[in-house]
Length: 324
Ligand SMILES: Nc1ncnc2c1ncn2[C@@H]1O[C@H](COP(=O)(O)OP(=O)(O)OP(=O)(O)O)[C@@H](O)[C@H]1O
Ligand SMILES: [Mg+2]
Image 1: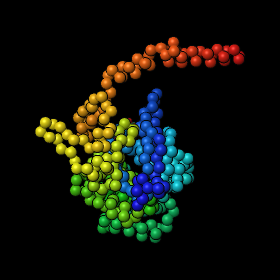
Image 2: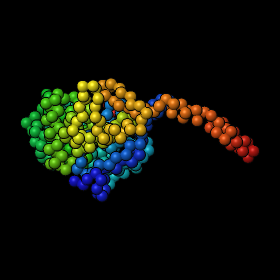
Image 3: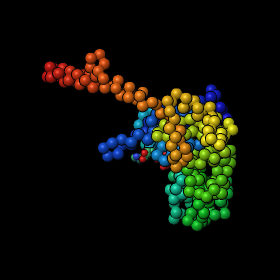
Image 4: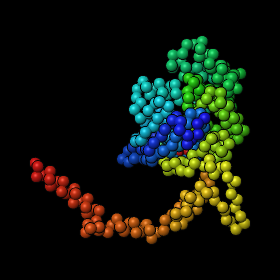
């Protein structure tokens, strides 16, 4: 596999990607200019708090939604321009999806075998071929003996195994997994992660996985990216290789270099306790903020920004009147 900094053309190229949703009278900006690349065969984990934009990013990469702005390519496919038949082909052939909610992955009134053959039926693969491949896949996810059961007769872990087989039915290059182990107990989650790792080798998959489990991310992924408020943060892979810092008796901690560089220009560091952990947030001095606000309000060259905007607008209206 080529290195992240190597010269090989990235398989995924995400440049200044913005995603905004229009909700009644306002917009929610879920992604604010995301930049990242992935090489073919890489496995990357995305961690971040609820509402950070993780699913939004996966949906864009899966062709389930389109970016509001930016550039996004997967392999040779430019996802910005993709429409109609080409978009449907991309979803059916190039990408497989596994969701956290097991109910979203499978049809409950159909057998396991039928669930796995369905995506192949949609691309016109003959009955013999699709049964053969479905059986191979069910063996690969170690659930061949359950082929004639319905998903409701299986455990959560088993259902996620079937979901992975469904996602891989049409031999995609890219597997997108949105908290695939989020609804599972620790043991089943471990097994599913081990399975995903084996399948990555076996089928040469590129995998982008959302997880809230930092430990899983560090153990199974090549890189871990953090997403917060629609923006990518520090790549945690470097800091994961350093010895984890420990809190001393006085409550002091030696922060990793990568974290220190994020905080060194801050006047103060705010500490917040959040459900997902402890957040260190750089803060500027109140005096600096006040200066910035005052600069915006106070007149510059005789007129404030607001006044200038008013003059410009009024001038345009006057010119228009003159033309009429
Ligand atoms: N279809 C949509 N319409 C409007 N707003 C949306 C839509 N999907 C997501 N959002 C908003 O975009 C932001 C990011 O949501 P997203 O689902 O990507 O977060 P997430 O990181 O996956 O969160 P979680 O960990 O809870 O799944 C949130 O503020 C969410 O409310
Ligand atoms: Mg989500």
